Length: 220
Image (cartoon, rainbow, N blue to C red; front, side):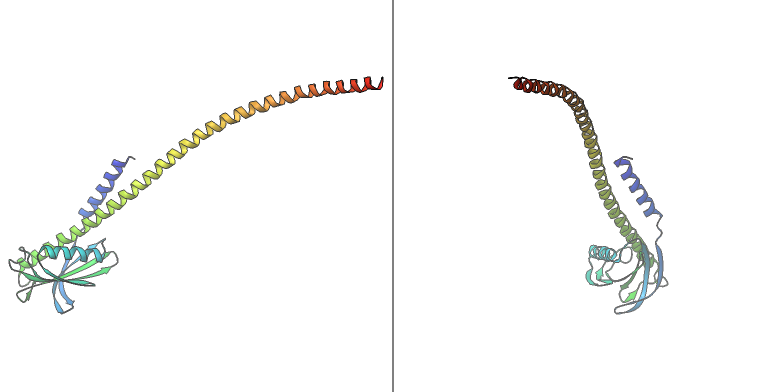
C-alpha cells in the first residue's frame, strides 16, 4: 500500500468518524463557583478537558469576552454572540473529564437572567447551536492532531522500511562478494593440494639426492 493511498484512507476514516458523532445536548441546573444556574450541557467524546478549556478560552476571546480561568472552568464577561443576543453577556463554562468524554456546561447571563429554554427559546437554540458547533470544532481539531501524529508515525515507519530494504540489498551484495571470495578460496585450496603433491615429489627426489651424496661420502 503506497503512502498517498494510506494517508487518504486515514483521512477518510477520520472524517467519516467525525461526521458520525452525535453531540448529546441537555439542559439542567449546574453548580458554578458563584452559584447554581440553568445551563446547557454537551458531552464531547474522544477529547481531553485541557484541550476543551483551551479552545473555549480562544472562542470567548474571539467574542471579545474578558477572561478569567480556573482549573475546571472559564468565565467570560461581556462576550457577544449575535445568535444568542445582540448585547454582551457573561458566559460561565465548567468542564469535567469522564473517561474519554468531556462534559461542558455553559450558563449565559444576559442582563441578570440566565438563558433558559422555557423563557427564551431563540436564545436557548442559539446557545445550543453554538455549543454543538464548538464541540464539533474541538473534535475536528483532535482528529486533525491524530491524523498528523499518524502520518508522522507512518513517515517514520516508511523510513525504517527503506533502511531495511537498503540493508537487505547490501547484504545480498555482500553475499555475492562472499560467494566470489569463497570460490577464489576453493580454487586456491585445490591449487594448494596440487602444489603439496608436487612438493612431495620434489622432497622425495631431494631426499634421494641426499642419500646418494651420503653413500658417495662413505665410499671415499
